[in-house]
Length: 454
Image 1 (spheres, rainbow, N blue to C red):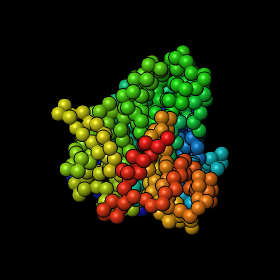
Image 2 (image 1 turned 90 degrees about the vertical axis):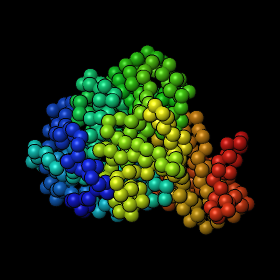
Image 3 (image 1 turned 120 degrees about the vertical axis):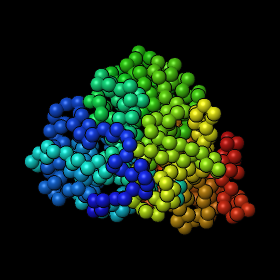
Image 4 (image 1 turned 180 degrees about the vertical axis):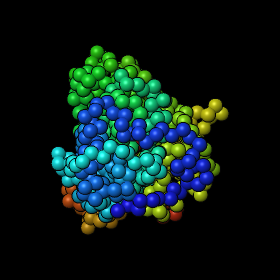
């Protein structure tokens, strides 16, 4: 079990609860749903989980592509004061085992078609400082980090995004991002709790299927990395008429440049917003400006630091929390930024060695650790290569024995139970990996080599 109480690393007025913000009540997360049958299912699943020993502070884990039952599970957990632990559906067996070892769930849902049901639990848990979810994200150090969010942090962010986007009951969101992501959770699960609009989940991304859903469901709002929208624009069935209902696009990650915004705006006839955030600090910047009460500043190294009521309360690993947060609550984003005299914020680079492929964060250290465990690989360095569709893709430079190629690399990652999206898509065998005077790999030289290669 996860401990039922957790001390936030943030201090002073950034500690939850009791902050100066007008946090929405917990009820909006649990009862602001579009249809009564969903509320009834939440109550009965909460009763079923309670009958299996789930209570305040208990962790409930599951692994599944997007489907309606995930929204029910999240809300049922929150009704009991329990902690939702969604496992990314593309995680391999090795990664899943690591997640379960880290959280020690009181209950694991192995089959979403057989979620336990029991006597309805109608009264929601009322302590908004209770942990609500553990979301796993790739960190620059290699091992995935378990990011801790409370009911209050999620509620606050949902209310702020509803206001920022001007969403109402007539809206409908298409959600292809996994509900194990902060984007899927925020926009597909909690936002429809603030305003009861419809969420249309996609289990897997398919541009033609997305066009059919936008047209058939009259989707008005969509969130995702540029790859989603680029692939729809390139799909044979794309037409302006089929996406006429879409009025707002929110896009973040690699590749969200001015050219993409202009092209997507013309093609979809919709407002396209450039957003920036992370699992730890969800959607803190839209179109170059902060949202709500979030604070930002750039330190002497050019790194963007941030703090505010939507911030996570830390990581499962206290050492990671201490490393990422300052004593007064500022979070090190790992991104380089510039702030203009007028307050506009521009992300200009990354300090962290993270590759963002199709909206998925991939730790270069994790990729390198897997590669260097291969008996034929002496040294490996992973870098990102610009890709017009995915934003970036993984390129591996390796010092290896003869015969280690892309096919061998793919087979090795599959055998180790690593998610397919983390597997290098290009392998470059080199005699020697260039080093800096410090002895560290010269990643800039390798990125330059990638950029100038055919």
